Amino acid sequence: MSLITCGPGEELYSKFGHSALRIRDVSQGFDVIYNYGLFDFNAPNFYLNFVKGKLRYFLGKHDTESFIASFVREDRWVREQVLDIDEKAALELLQRLEENYRPENRYYLYDFFYANCATKIRDLLLEVSEGSLTYPYGQAYSNKSYRDLIAENLPVNDWGGWGIDLALGSLIDTPTSNFQAQFLPEYTADQLSTAQWNGRSAVRKDHYLSDKTQTDLAPLSFNPWGPLTGGMVLMLLVWLTRTNKKYRLMTHGFLNLISGVIGVVLVLLWTATDHQTTAWNAHLFWAQPWLILAPWLISSKNNSHRISRLLVLSGIGVCLVMWVLNIQSFHWMMLPIWGAIIMSHMFTFKTKP
Image (cartoon, rainbow, N blue to C red):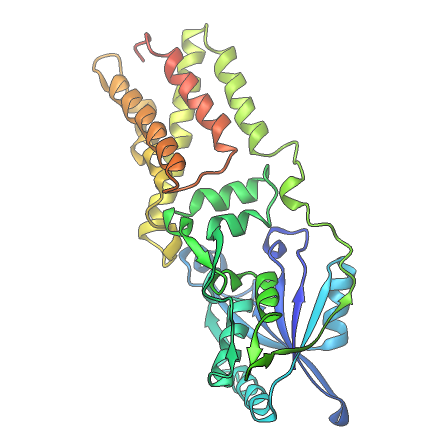
């Protein structure tokens, strides 16, 4: 019985690594990987269910050799931790896996933080151990929030990381325990290395099936076409159109429109999906949904442009205060985007749209 942990890949969905269970019986010629990380792209309403938080993952079985080889081809490291557990628990674990693999049982509702390939294995091991498996340091704080843990696996200047950070609300900014941090496969493996089974180490052997040759520098890598570039382009656009009233107002309306669209999406993620972690998102202080109509509502016949300026600039100010007070953290690449919005409002200060 082994926990298999695989390193991060190049694609966004693989940036956080992977966990699986290996069950091996040499005498029976049995060597199988049980994998809770499978999903079907061709399932009906796949993308709609993904957005709504109703995506179903399922348990699959693989030949160990071909499973490991698929990660080696992607230049991803593979770590194996052979469990030192009693025979009763080992048999119970195999029976539970086979029961879960039955067609009527293999599907489950995926949740990135609470029900994924790593947490399903962690919870299953705890269940079959009947109290024998303990994590001495599990309740200790990791000194990191869920948002911090996600950021460790994503480049700083990356649209995917920026989008994920934008969509998630303040609920993920609370400190996590070492146990909670196990939603990430590498943290599951690290915590298992210190875990105990009936007072002794729960791991009998810890080694790499594929060398850990990759250097984990994902957050330090730089994408020249990432959100930093996007924010700088917006700031440049605002600056270049500042002296022409027509173009200045077009740029201002464009920024309002984009902010409004983002706001509408965030409201829908909060109210129209099952995602728990998209609630209470402070980005709504600046990305106000009504701004989607701003280019048409703001006119020279009323003071709505002044109200718009007050609401948006105050909203950005609230976000900055919340950031300083650690109520909600924001992606660093928001700074040039906010800078462009602030510049646009300042340049239109004496302009009646």
